[in-house]
Image (cartoon, rainbow, N blue to C red; front, top):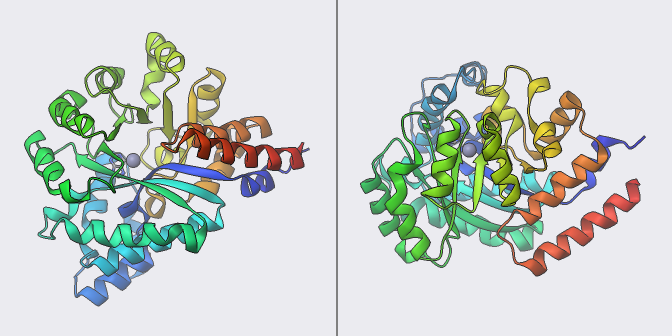
Length: 338
Ligand code: ADE
Ligand code: ZN
């Protein structure tokens, strides 16, 4: 019998769905609040943690935007990112493709440069410090207008060679991908990779729109595409990667019980699913914990765990040569567990 948890720990992995602002641990939130003189509605760590009891995505987002108000300086964004990378190193995560939400910061008066300079300074040290490579993905907040997204794309212009892609996040219901068709076309013109949250709470039609109108390279979440047989076949046949986030899905009541999580079903259907933590500080676990709890709840086999690790690299925006190196390392680790 393979020791599944030892296999999970030993495998090199990539994380493809992580909001840096969602890695803000309660301890760090209190620390930043204090050093920046920001008043939070919580007095103790227990009060913060008690507030993390969500019934849907919007419940979470309200707390998430409030939490990020403690991030004020480049140093805060640097420290936030560095703490996340340290967790990745502990989990044997070798490559990250991280999201940030510039509008969550510019809308409260910070210049665009503050979050991105702080984040990039930590990411640029990650290879030497932790052996971790990265891609940075800038998300547009879908509850805001397409015009606001265009303004954000304009502000990002000086950083175009350091931003690898754009994404779409925040409140899904009522904000279909079609709302952002023009700004995604503009991002594509700039050579950026395109991803979008779709089918987390939104219906299969939103996944169709993300594919047909936004022409995305990868689907974030995608749970509800399972409601449509033709869509399952299309996503499988096109080899599109899904960045699935089980502990997030449990926290936001996308599934009622982790035992009902569709991760195993996705793999059995031949979908290219990957395992990710989304907003680990809010949802109770980083990458390895998502692997461990999901494996236990739905009964993932050693082969399925290895497939998920492989998918995390083949679904990344790394070069073919870089992917091949990571896959060879996975083969070496897998052989030790065979
Ligand atoms: N922003 C941060 N986490 C998110 C999620 N899971 N869905 C949509 N927007 C988000
Ligand atoms: Zn997300």
